[in-house]
Image (cartoon, rainbow, N blue to C red; front, side):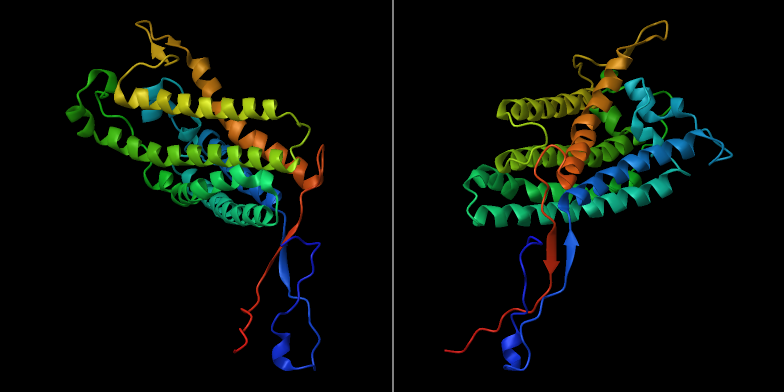
Length: 314
């Protein structure tokens, strides 16, 4: 319930008139800052993974050779995942990611309850957002829950010779242990990408419907942003699946006979562009909403515990 509403102990009638109603203690929580915390933890994890894996300050036996990883061999450039796939960095990074996933799971559940409460209170503009949340909140919760499996199923070094999906049969691919390991790893990474996209979409729709979107009041602008987010997610997914299944997708990186990598910058643009849309932008918007920058300041909610009111006997 919002912090500006009082809460009383509904069981005080059990003690007669001796004790007046008392305020129920509760936890004050700002959901926007909870989401910010949940999204910042993976960002901090990637940075930590890079430092541990690439600098002798944190790892005397490093830097690790990222050029020999399966991801580098398959995509022809170093994806951010390689910074968190190997020990000694993987262990502390996994801890930060797990903390972030717990925060995002809690946010997902509480955001669902906030949306249900506001809609039940008569905010008819939230009808379609409530429907979207009803069918997607479980997907997001499950995706955040299982995402740490990425660290359990880390990619391993490619076989020698490398089994290239573009020039191999399915029997050869499925018999290749490094290929199977990466597919398992990517599956949980895909769920993370999906959950972030769904969270960004719901957040955009929710705050537009309530008029709390920072600096932006135009529905057209919000639709364009959300549309771009969906299109980039679909393209990014197809881009990776194309590599895994051996079919060409526009924008695929490639290596010519001279060893020159083509479209590598495009690969970086897609990778960092998607992260910008579903992580950086939501963090900035949530900070603005939490402190009332360019919009109405978001409510602080109180989570309370109280026994169920005893029904009076007829």
